[in-house]
Amino acid sequence: MFKKKIGLVSLAAFTLVLAACSGGTDETAGSTDTGMASDSTAESSGLVEFETVMTNDEEAIEGGTLRYAMVASSPFQGIFSPEFYEDAYDAELMGFTHQELFSIDENFMYSQDGMATYEFDEEARTIAITLKDDLKWSDGEDLTTEDVLFSYEVIGHPDYPGVRYGADFANIVGMEEYNSGSADTISGITIEDDQNITIEYIEVNPSILQAGGGIWGYPMPKHQLGDVAIEDMIASPEIRKNPVGAGPFRVKSINPGESVEFEANEYYWKGAPNVDGVVLEVVSPETIVSEMQNGNYDIAKMPTDQFDTYKDMENITLLGRPELAYTYIGFKLGHFDKEAGKNVSDPDKKMADVNLRKAMAYAIDNNAIASEFYQGLRENAKGMIPPVFGDYVNTDIEGYYYDHDMANQLLDDAGYEDVDGDGFRENPEGEELVIKFASMSGGATAEPIAQYYMQEWNEVGLNVELSTGRLIEFQAFYDMLESDDDEIDVFQAAWGTGTDPNPTGLYGETASFNYIRYVDEENSELLSKINSKDAFDPELKFQVFHDWQEHMYENAPVIPTLWRSELFAVNNRVKNYGIDYDRLEGYEAIELTADSPY
Image (cartoon, rainbow, N blue to C red):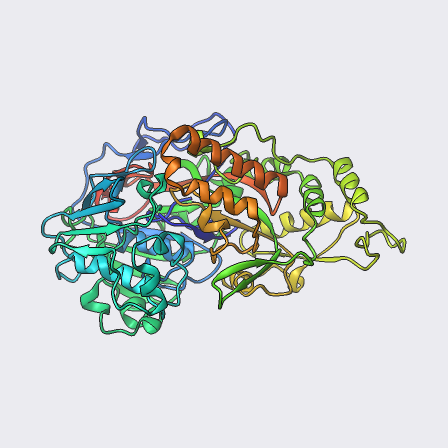
């Protein structure tokens, strides 16, 4: 379960890669006479608790079609490939068609109940993977270890244009030689037979068995994509129009960017799903409440900023959990050197002064944002590891809090003064300081939150303006971040952490997702310790995670703003749907008790 970029106001849900959260009242929402949630609850320190499993006493009909709303302000890209997709909308689509090899337990560690089992040999630094008997792709072809190897060969190839290649893959014996083009094969990956494959690593650390950690868990259909040039795969019809997966459903038809019709995959390793198919349609955050109220859809991840408008709706049950995600404000501190494949910090960047960054953190009141716009379903984030990760979280960090006196003092001491009397501070050299702030469009709260932040920064004498003069559409926003567009000095975004709290994929020197381009010797040393063999010692592991959080707090390359809850509205004709992170049953277990939502 790897990291992903997500929409700021309205996140897309996904079963392959998951996200983070918050709460408000102590009231349990959504119970009705026909749709009932189980006693299972999702807990998050100090946050609201909701039921996580939808049960139903009504008798199920045979088959039926599930109607699913993807709540999004933008069209989806439609990249049906774990190797190539980048955003949460495509991840949400693949929740129906693709599945990871391994199951996970309540601690987000790999378990032995999935399509494959494993044996880890710490001394030999190997993972031996065994596929279950008779696994099939959704087109009926055999799924074998050749498909497991093929995914590594694609991601590690010199022509691979995606974002998955990084330290985890470079840690495989022989991968760097293969990636550089000096070897035709990956020497550290050995196929024993159609069901058994062994991967040898240069170094091993606790993340190796953490879901989303060192093992790439998604096979790739070699029989379908083996003859497609790797640089052409992302745009190929095999991925965009006729994808083959190992999930409970397969694509029947696609209306690009707008809707997908799925049909049951009779070759699914657990057996065919209970429903005949799924119709997924993109629905805007502005209309999803009325759509659910009118019984047009069965399942939707709801905008938390509209909680008051649907919390008492009688035809739905609300399920909720802490998201494995956080919202943040990031500072552009350098650029990505594509030739060297690494981030490079620039000490002359506009936002390079740590005191300027800290002042902007103390100038804003994220508790007020959580209360005013999210009915208590979010809260001020004190760090960049969500509280659902328990012992990994450094609870001693107090976080940034609303204090204009502190913000003004930091700016004064750092030499940011209003030289010309226009009400805005110049930089320490006496030059005009205009900070360009980028924020995504989407949902009713995007504009007022962006305006609030700029207003508070203006109050402490910082001239902050919207990049491009307006909010930016989701895909365009991330395109600008990836290209290090000069129009962005500061930006507001959100990260889905995945099920591995290891921050290397987001803040490492070679991480393409390190959009702030933060490179620091101490940061690199701490990340190296997190990824060392010594971290198998639990005491050391948790301590170095705590030290990394303290480092990021003291250096403020990012202002964590909100921890968050995610809520799912489920029509009361649905049964056997659950959102627990360690739940073994997925979409294949869903049943319906009526011919259509009500």
